[in-house]
Length: 399
Image (tube, rainbow, N blue to C red; front, side, top):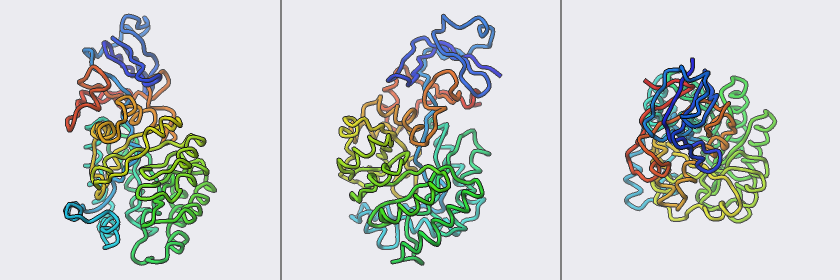
């Protein structure tokens, strides 16, 4: 099966925006086979039924490289608590935060978790996502972490969406391990990692390195176990303080360090040297009313690639829309619209270790978004309205 798109403004994302005016694209099967001017379509494809894009903007399908959409319950009450002055750490230390979602997730069946996750995935698809990462981390037992990962793996069987699954058992310390984080790493995090890998449930390994979670030494033990299994690593790093998690993760070749509001110059340098992506998560910054911004200018100066993601989760970032996250990244952190779009295409794919998406070029997956827009900056400019016209997934237009 082949498709021909004509008369589009194509943002190839291969060199900046890489705009092709009055562009055309041919896909055969799941792959792009040709792009260029509409006037230059090769004869072999000129007989294909053409989809006239009417000058609309065509971009790579958006990639959400950080989300937590498999969970039970909600945390609207904590939203009220924070409005009344409670900090993220105060909510967590009072037994709320991640642990309240852990209770609800443990109580939910796989069918219940899947139904809820699919509803959330639908919101992400409607905003232009074609690839998403989904983390575990709300089970915090071997059985419940595996339950979450099985659900995450099932999403792609029910939706036209590519899903990357990430083991995040080192997300929080459950009540039964209070004061015993090393035991939790040894008895839950590492065993669940081995079990998940044996069952083909994971593509990467993550951890939360923070004073309310796990120390760099504890994270390093988990990451060494991941590397022994041949799995890539990434880290929730420097969200609330600078524990030098980014230095550790980059030194171990991490794909990404995420949040990074409190990262120091040594962390930036380590990420630049390793080619580690900084995943910027403005939804959490906004929801938690944080004041410490990630050092965007320092990342720019050092050449650290910056991705942008939703961090879709029940507590600190109930955000499903990548275009909204792009707007927040520009407005709150002064990223440019080009950086924001690179952050949800090229650099987001890199943050997941994927090389076959995030740009429009021959050989790449034909995962694309056609927008009711004529310039890429419009995607970051609008607030709360997603101008998605049509999504193309694997060379097929969505119905």
